[in-house]
Image (cartoon, rainbow, N blue to C red; front, side):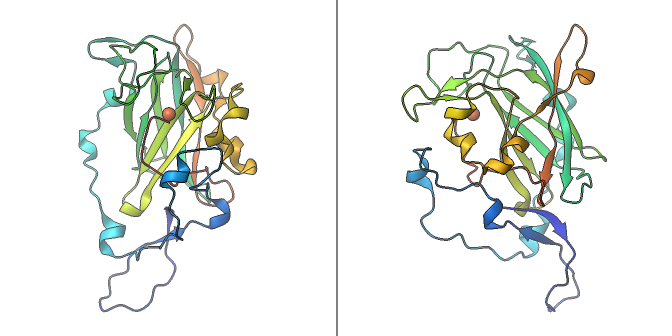
Length: 255
Ligand SMILES: [Fe+2]
Protein backbone atom coordinates (compact mmCIF):
# COMPACT_ATOMS: atom_id res chain seq x y z
CA UNK A 1 0.00 0.00 0.00
CA UNK A 2 1.23 3.45 -0.77
CA UNK A 3 -0.07 6.91 -0.28
CA UNK A 4 0.75 10.50 -1.00
CA UNK A 5 2.82 11.68 -3.89
CA UNK A 6 6.41 12.69 -3.67
CA UNK A 7 8.38 14.57 -6.28
CA UNK A 8 11.72 13.16 -5.20
CA UNK A 9 14.24 12.89 -8.03
CA UNK A 10 14.01 9.75 -10.09
CA UNK A 11 16.69 7.89 -11.96
CA UNK A 12 17.25 9.07 -15.48
CA UNK A 13 14.91 7.37 -17.93
CA UNK A 14 14.77 7.07 -21.65
CA UNK A 15 12.17 9.78 -21.92
CA UNK A 16 11.93 13.18 -20.24
CA UNK A 17 8.58 12.22 -18.67
CA UNK A 18 8.73 12.67 -14.91
CA UNK A 19 6.36 10.36 -13.09
CA UNK A 20 5.12 10.98 -9.55
CA UNK A 21 6.54 8.64 -6.95
CA UNK A 22 4.47 7.27 -4.09
CA UNK A 23 5.82 6.79 -0.62
CA UNK A 24 6.32 3.21 0.46
CA UNK A 25 4.59 1.94 3.57
CA UNK A 26 7.01 1.34 6.42
CA UNK A 27 6.79 -1.98 8.24
CA UNK A 28 6.53 -0.39 11.68
CA UNK A 29 3.37 1.51 10.70
CA UNK A 30 1.38 -1.23 9.05
CA UNK A 31 -1.25 -3.43 10.61
CA UNK A 32 0.09 -6.99 10.39
CA UNK A 33 -1.40 -9.27 7.72
CA UNK A 34 -1.29 -12.17 10.19
CA UNK A 35 -2.57 -11.72 13.71
CA UNK A 36 -2.90 -14.67 16.06
CA UNK A 37 -6.27 -13.66 17.48
CA UNK A 38 -7.79 -13.13 14.03
CA UNK A 39 -8.06 -16.77 12.99
CA UNK A 40 -8.64 -16.50 9.25
CA UNK A 41 -5.46 -14.50 8.77
CA UNK A 42 -3.56 -17.74 9.37
CA UNK A 43 -5.08 -19.08 6.15
CA UNK A 44 -4.71 -16.08 3.90
CA UNK A 45 -1.78 -14.01 5.09
CA UNK A 46 1.25 -14.20 2.79
CA UNK A 47 4.07 -16.33 4.16
CA UNK A 48 6.75 -14.49 2.21
CA UNK A 49 7.89 -10.92 2.40
CA UNK A 50 5.83 -8.71 0.08
CA UNK A 51 7.55 -7.52 -3.07
CA UNK A 52 7.25 -3.85 -3.90
CA UNK A 53 6.18 -3.43 -7.50
CA UNK A 54 7.92 -0.89 -9.69
CA UNK A 55 6.03 2.36 -10.15
CA UNK A 56 5.72 2.66 -13.89
CA UNK A 57 3.34 4.67 -16.03
CA UNK A 58 0.44 2.25 -15.59
CA UNK A 59 0.77 2.08 -11.83
CA UNK A 60 0.97 5.83 -11.25
CA UNK A 61 -1.54 7.16 -13.78
CA UNK A 62 -4.47 4.73 -13.80
CA UNK A 63 -7.32 4.21 -13.38
CA UNK A 64 -9.81 6.74 -14.67
CA UNK A 65 -12.50 6.78 -12.02
CA UNK A 66 -15.44 8.01 -14.03
CA UNK A 67 -16.44 10.32 -11.19
CA UNK A 68 -19.27 11.72 -13.30
CA UNK A 69 -21.10 8.53 -12.42
CA UNK A 70 -20.95 9.36 -8.69
CA UNK A 71 -24.18 11.11 -7.77
CA UNK A 72 -25.26 13.04 -4.68
CA UNK A 73 -27.68 10.23 -3.85
CA UNK A 74 -24.75 7.83 -3.52
CA UNK A 75 -23.69 9.67 -0.34
CA UNK A 76 -27.05 9.15 1.39
CA UNK A 77 -27.37 5.50 2.41
CA UNK A 78 -30.64 6.08 4.26
CA UNK A 79 -32.71 6.32 1.07
CA UNK A 80 -32.68 3.19 -1.02
CA UNK A 81 -35.19 1.19 -3.05
CA UNK A 82 -37.90 3.82 -2.68
CA UNK A 83 -37.95 4.05 1.08
CA UNK A 84 -36.13 5.05 4.24
CA UNK A 85 -33.80 2.80 6.21
CA UNK A 86 -34.49 1.82 9.81
CA UNK A 87 -32.15 2.93 12.56
CA UNK A 88 -30.31 5.86 14.10
CA UNK A 89 -29.56 8.40 11.36
CA UNK A 90 -25.99 9.72 11.46
CA UNK A 91 -23.75 11.97 9.41
CA UNK A 92 -20.18 10.79 9.00
CA UNK A 93 -17.84 13.45 7.72
CA UNK A 94 -14.20 14.44 7.64
CA UNK A 95 -11.26 15.18 5.41
CA UNK A 96 -8.70 13.14 3.57
CA UNK A 97 -5.31 14.65 4.38
CA UNK A 98 -1.71 13.91 3.52
CA UNK A 99 0.99 13.62 6.14
CA UNK A 100 1.62 17.36 5.97
CA UNK A 101 -2.02 18.15 6.71
CA UNK A 102 -2.79 19.14 3.14
CA UNK A 103 -6.22 18.14 1.79
CA UNK A 104 -6.38 15.39 -0.81
CA UNK A 105 -9.08 16.32 -3.34
CA UNK A 106 -10.70 14.12 -5.99
CA UNK A 107 -10.37 10.92 -4.00
CA UNK A 108 -13.12 8.35 -4.38
CA UNK A 109 -14.31 7.39 -0.89
CA UNK A 110 -16.45 4.26 -0.81
CA UNK A 111 -18.11 2.78 2.28
CA UNK A 112 -19.90 -0.44 3.12
CA UNK A 113 -21.49 -1.42 6.38
CA UNK A 114 -23.99 -3.59 8.21
CA UNK A 115 -27.50 -2.31 8.82
CA UNK A 116 -28.90 -1.18 12.17
CA UNK A 117 -29.38 -4.80 13.21
CA UNK A 118 -25.79 -5.71 12.37
CA UNK A 119 -26.46 -7.61 9.16
CA UNK A 120 -24.91 -7.14 5.72
CA UNK A 121 -26.84 -7.52 2.53
CA UNK A 122 -24.45 -10.25 1.45
CA UNK A 123 -24.87 -13.90 0.52
CA UNK A 124 -22.33 -14.87 3.13
CA UNK A 125 -24.13 -13.18 6.00
CA UNK A 126 -26.88 -15.42 7.32
CA UNK A 127 -27.03 -14.81 11.03
CA UNK A 128 -30.60 -14.34 12.35
CA UNK A 129 -30.84 -10.55 12.26
CA UNK A 130 -33.32 -8.80 9.95
CA UNK A 131 -32.45 -7.34 6.57
CA UNK A 132 -33.74 -3.88 5.83
CA UNK A 133 -35.45 -3.59 2.42
CA UNK A 134 -34.39 0.05 2.25
CA UNK A 135 -30.75 -0.33 3.19
CA UNK A 136 -27.99 -1.82 1.08
CA UNK A 137 -25.11 -0.46 3.14
CA UNK A 138 -23.21 0.93 0.14
CA UNK A 139 -22.16 4.52 -0.48
CA UNK A 140 -19.58 6.58 -2.31
CA UNK A 141 -18.53 10.19 -2.65
CA UNK A 142 -15.65 12.20 -4.12
CA UNK A 143 -13.63 14.46 -1.84
CA UNK A 144 -14.01 18.13 -2.75
CA UNK A 145 -11.25 20.68 -3.32
CA UNK A 146 -10.63 20.82 0.44
CA UNK A 147 -10.44 17.05 0.77
CA UNK A 148 -13.83 16.85 2.48
CA UNK A 149 -16.28 13.97 2.34
CA UNK A 150 -19.65 13.40 4.02
CA UNK A 151 -22.13 10.56 4.20
CA UNK A 152 -25.59 10.27 5.68
CA UNK A 153 -26.19 6.76 6.90
CA UNK A 154 -27.48 4.59 9.74
CA UNK A 155 -25.57 3.69 12.87
CA UNK A 156 -24.44 0.12 12.12
CA UNK A 157 -25.10 -2.63 14.62
CA UNK A 158 -22.58 -5.06 16.09
CA UNK A 159 -22.57 -8.58 14.65
CA UNK A 160 -21.22 -12.01 15.56
CA UNK A 161 -18.55 -13.41 13.26
CA UNK A 162 -17.46 -16.77 14.58
CA UNK A 163 -13.80 -15.99 15.11
CA UNK A 164 -14.01 -17.35 18.64
CA UNK A 165 -16.75 -18.14 21.13
CA UNK A 166 -19.19 -15.24 21.41
CA UNK A 167 -17.10 -13.04 19.13
CA UNK A 168 -18.74 -9.74 18.15
CA UNK A 169 -17.41 -7.05 15.88
CA UNK A 170 -17.63 -3.53 17.31
CA UNK A 171 -19.83 -1.28 15.20
CA UNK A 172 -17.82 -0.08 12.23
CA UNK A 173 -17.95 1.28 8.71
CA UNK A 174 -15.59 -0.05 6.06
CA UNK A 175 -13.82 2.61 3.99
CA UNK A 176 -12.03 2.30 0.68
CA UNK A 177 -10.10 5.22 -0.77
CA UNK A 178 -9.21 5.25 -4.42
CA UNK A 179 -6.92 7.98 -5.62
CA UNK A 180 -5.56 8.75 -9.03
CA UNK A 181 -3.39 5.67 -9.34
CA UNK A 182 -3.60 1.94 -8.72
CA UNK A 183 -1.02 2.48 -6.01
CA UNK A 184 -3.48 4.65 -4.09
CA UNK A 185 -6.05 2.04 -3.07
CA UNK A 186 -6.40 2.11 0.70
CA UNK A 187 -8.84 0.14 2.85
CA UNK A 188 -9.67 0.66 6.51
CA UNK A 189 -12.48 0.65 9.06
CA UNK A 190 -13.96 3.47 11.11
CA UNK A 191 -15.15 2.73 14.65
CA UNK A 192 -17.41 4.62 17.04
CA UNK A 193 -16.29 6.13 20.35
CA UNK A 194 -16.89 4.26 23.58
CA UNK A 195 -17.74 0.91 22.01
CA UNK A 196 -17.85 -1.77 24.74
CA UNK A 197 -16.69 -4.44 22.28
CA UNK A 198 -13.23 -3.08 21.49
CA UNK A 199 -11.40 -5.16 24.08
CA UNK A 200 -12.46 -8.54 22.62
CA UNK A 201 -12.09 -7.72 18.91
CA UNK A 202 -8.85 -9.03 17.38
CA UNK A 203 -9.27 -6.96 14.22
CA UNK A 204 -9.35 -3.71 16.20
CA UNK A 205 -6.60 -4.93 18.49
CA UNK A 206 -4.36 -5.88 15.57
CA UNK A 207 -3.87 -2.13 15.08
CA UNK A 208 -0.73 -0.99 16.91
CA UNK A 209 -1.89 0.40 20.30
CA UNK A 210 -0.52 3.86 19.61
CA UNK A 211 -2.62 4.12 16.44
CA UNK A 212 -5.96 2.69 17.59
CA UNK A 213 -7.44 6.05 18.56
CA UNK A 214 -7.04 7.20 14.97
CA UNK A 215 -9.44 4.51 13.81
CA UNK A 216 -12.20 5.87 16.08
CA UNK A 217 -14.46 8.73 15.01
CA UNK A 218 -15.27 11.66 17.28
CA UNK A 219 -18.82 12.58 18.20
CA UNK A 220 -19.44 16.17 17.06
CA UNK A 221 -22.37 17.87 18.76
CA UNK A 222 -21.96 21.02 16.65
CA UNK A 223 -22.54 19.04 13.48
CA UNK A 224 -25.59 17.16 14.69
CA UNK A 225 -28.82 18.19 13.03
CA UNK A 226 -31.70 19.01 15.33
CA UNK A 227 -34.52 16.52 15.00
CA UNK A 228 -32.60 14.71 12.31
CA UNK A 229 -29.17 13.14 12.81
CA UNK A 230 -26.16 12.65 15.07
CA UNK A 231 -22.73 13.46 13.64
CA UNK A 232 -19.33 11.77 13.75
CA UNK A 233 -16.10 13.32 12.56
CA UNK A 234 -13.31 11.18 11.13
CA UNK A 235 -10.28 12.44 9.24
CA UNK A 236 -8.22 9.99 7.19
CA UNK A 237 -4.51 10.73 7.06
CA UNK A 238 -2.40 9.19 4.31
CA UNK A 239 1.09 8.53 5.63
CA UNK A 240 3.21 10.26 8.25
CA UNK A 241 3.06 10.25 12.04
CA UNK A 242 -0.71 10.81 12.08
CA UNK A 243 -1.43 8.06 9.60
CA UNK A 244 -4.77 6.29 9.85
CA UNK A 245 -4.16 2.55 10.32
CA UNK A 246 -4.95 0.80 7.06
CA UNK A 247 -5.70 -2.82 6.42
CA UNK A 248 -3.26 -4.59 4.19
CA UNK A 249 -5.92 -7.06 3.12
CA UNK A 250 -8.68 -5.54 1.01
CA UNK A 251 -10.76 -8.61 0.34
CA UNK A 252 -13.81 -6.83 1.72
CA UNK A 253 -15.33 -9.83 3.44
CA UNK A 254 -18.09 -9.43 5.97
CA UNK A 255 -15.71 -9.44 8.92
FE1 LIG B 1 -17.61 -5.45 8.74
